[in-house]
Length: 302
Length: 131
Ligand code: HEM
Ligand code: SF4
Ligand code: FES
Image (cartoon, rainbow over all chains, first blue to last red; front, side, top):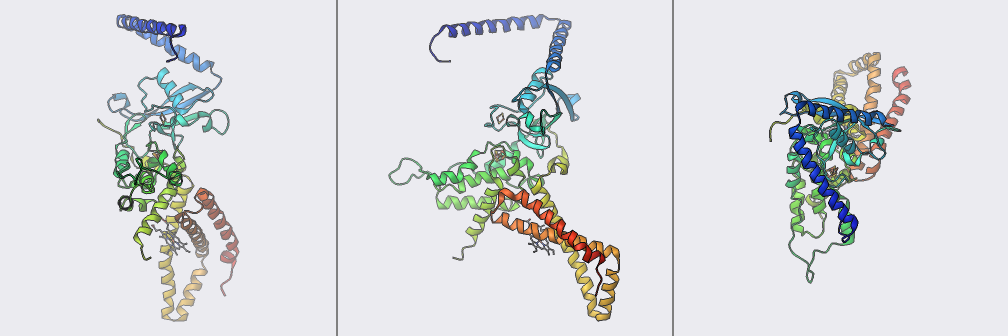
């Protein structure tokens, strides 16, 4: 808040100090608590959770994949069930966070922005790759509140812990198409790299990628072939290959990357990526267009 | 990083019950394509009997057509061929970047048309007489 010094501001500062003090005191108290007292406090919070669930008009059952190689009880993957009170507007991520905060603080998943911007929380929800924060729990039922929501880590990636998968391979594929603008030259008399409106429109959708990996996870071809660049990386290549501000030489270099053995020609137009992309990028369309560009640049009879 | 968990092939390729239209189209197209290749061999084998004269060819083909199983297989072959052609045309449009928004509906249309053609062919294949 930077709206000048007001009484409210003072109040809030005071509340903050009090809160910090209280937390410190609580910390002290905690260290002095006996194990019986801690258990009693835990029992109380469990009771509170039960009450919240019982009082709720609607609840939804989360079935969540659990795995942790460092905890003996979780070495064998399993599903845990959490009953969560449903509230209007609740997303799958909200429900997961409630489960984590109320039932099991070790429940692990990646999230940050909670608004479909950071790309951290692509999950396998009821058999489809979706962003947790962009998926309304209510949308998972034909009407009303769904009975159960099954949440698993993204398929076609190794699980590090619970819902967290190893994204390294995905990032490697993204990097391999050189996802950055490379032309240093500015046109005569201009200080900037001017892009025409039409060209901006052309690449607009392709710029929306948030690196969530949902598309790659949905792709059968990528599942069977780790060398395949995958939809997101090809879309990234499209974004730069179609950008008119980069010179012809660079564009050709980019086409060479995408038409390599494990580039665009691996795509079998199954459309699974296009269907799961949370940013509605027409991935298959872009891949197909690059295929045609690749053919055109190789067949120069005219 | 410590250990991680590889959930194996099922997780990699997903569960078939969760496949979407385009994924089924791909599987059916590969399957029908290879069935057609297989048929090509039997087709050539049957036709080659004509090398031994018209007698041999006629008795082979009549013998085969006399079997109910063969007539059922022919209906199946027709289904496979019709689907492969229709979906093949669909894929050609996809390659040209035309009608990508309706890729799922064109797949369902291929299935429905295949079904209609197969039903319409049943009288000919199962009941029809060989001249
Ligand atoms: C009018 C008739 C046909 C059309 C329009 C057609 C179309 C196509 C198309 C477009 C593909 C490529 C699919 C892709 O992009 O992956 C394909 C694949 C295939 N076709 Fe056909 N086809 C026809 C007839 C046949 C026949 C008669 C045979 C068998 C002798 C056949 C066997 C195959 C096979 C085996 C594949 C899969 C190849 C692979 O593994 O990639 N097709 N067909
Ligand atoms: S293309 Fe779509 S699904 Fe793929 S990583 Fe980018 S935002 Fe996610
Ligand atoms: S939390 Fe950032 S995309 Fe969902």
